[in-house]
Figure 1: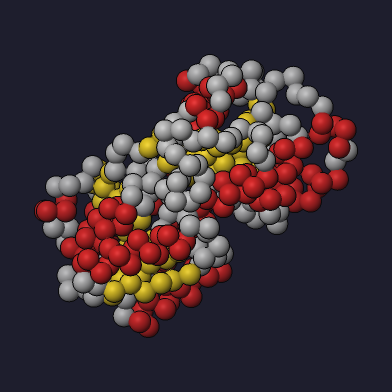
Figure 2 (figure 1 turned 120 degrees about the vertical axis):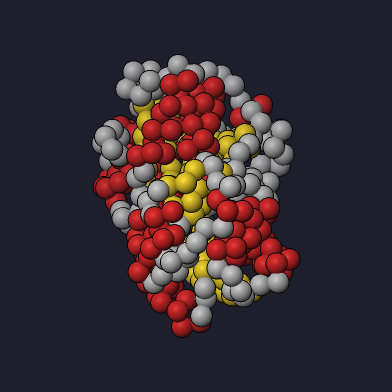
Length: 325
């Protein structure tokens, strides 16, 4: 990833800069990007693509200022305030914790979000058609039906399993909603869910180790930004412990995960870029309806299935949008 304006990545260094320098009005509008995760080239590219669609080119008539929290010891609230002090024209927030921080930090600067949760239940907007306030964006949330389908799919791959794991980040503001929806789906299928909490990288190994002790036969990994940023590690752990896993994003299956079922996160970031550009041209967030995911896709990694000794039923394979050999 190009360095660009990674002002917030250097921990507390940004706090020591002269405020006068921060307050200078930039020659071109600045779009601040706030995300509670590691840098991600694919998501950055999708955001840039969206800006390009409406006539904005980074380094020419717009400037991107990225703030990623992971690995730099800086909290989201600090980075959000720093973007505000830098007088960014728009904040693009990715991940629920980042969106909440941006919402709490400003009621005037437009905030465009890319969210994997229900924007209304999460408290981001009052209405999808008429967001009101200074927030709008794109949601790749596919509803509670997604969780039910994930359970149905993984259940067909692991016959007679009665206990499934659910990996969540307890620090995610919407974890309670995720757990509640998954529990409802589990009851409808007559199975039980064991909750696994991981709020940092060090929690991953103990979480997977506990699955073996409890006799959990398969796991659902929620779409938290912590997990997305560490997908290679989670996929490797699932392989090492021989635990069939289903994820919400295709990026996991592409990284070697067994299967994924959900909407495309890159589409949400591209749409966020489009909305950020439209706001720069004068439109108001309140007038831009929240863009909802229109397609849910199933990706199956056949190589991983074979390594786990699993046979993909034709009833499942026929539903796949993509099969990775």
